[in-house]
Image (cartoon, rainbow, N blue to C red; front, side, top):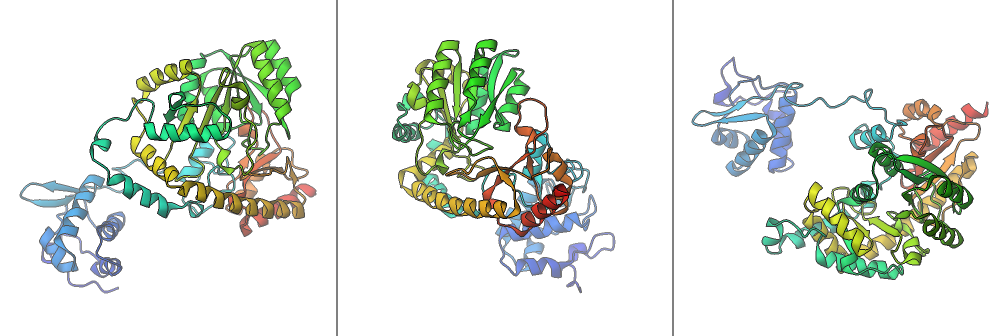
Length: 490
């Protein structure tokens, strides 16, 4: 590629010569600031600019590349903020970025297992992976399934409101109008909740953290589902409590085992997901709910009902919180499964006494949650768009779930249950007793698995794997499962 003549400031042999035709090819798609920054960052990564070399002036750069001075000013400011340039008063801009030295190294693919049995490493791999791997083990939906355009419209609408709303800390309980709206959502599920019973949090993860800090101390005994949500189990284990696993069946937890454990260990709490449980997709029967509440009263423990998958449910099931009236149940829910990951909004519904205790903990830890995100969510709920989006999402998920079940049946996979709703399937390859044995084979097909071990509260292998149906209609998964079936059939 022949470069156009270098600008005067770079003509000296000691200075680098920019491949300006390449930069201009990027600018052809538009003279936006993003295009300029992208091109220059690329030139830094290719070591075009030795440390200490002087950049052309804003005027020279704008004239040579045919872009506006305003765009160059904004671009240079960004490069200074990113650590590529240094602005020296009266002297101009100088390269200061040393590739591989001035930033923390990005972990290599070999340093982070992409299908790790460690829940923290697995989550880290899901968030960091840029290889284009098929993330069938991910808990969240693909970006293409999220209505990002309308979320952007809501962001713009909220941004036009008075600036004072963004300059102040939010209310400790969260944005009031959203809490009122959530109270109405809860009422539709027969959960008694006023705005004063709702505490907004930064996702359900913060909600679980606040509840654990209020209810528990290291060494306490807690009952959890087996298998169960690995984020909850991993957090509680890190918190230092003793986890007692309760086997999970198609119709919910093994109530007989729950009674034995509750009477033997006198736990402080039972953490469970009653509807579309992660990872099995199962829903607890009404009969089991009644017995669980009776045990909580008889053995004096709290129940934390995590309902983060509720928006995938087409026909509402009964919740513990509805049967209990918030006497022994703390209800947790979030919107993180259906909104972009940057909008982490969750909430707790509980008695006045518990909400007050959680507010005090929240004030100590984070003061408040993101009022801006809460305002955007309120806008989406209020104009009816969120409800319509969720209706479409349920239909799309149902089609994907049906197709995936047909696919698994054809391959001879065993499924734990056939959920009526939701985006999770819990399945196993016949003949495979330890799903971690499939990791290497999945890697060869560029598939990221969620093996069964992290979902178990106690150490031990599992033949099961969690599949997110939104990712399952992909030839890579079909090829991997075909090979895995062949390997374990022999």
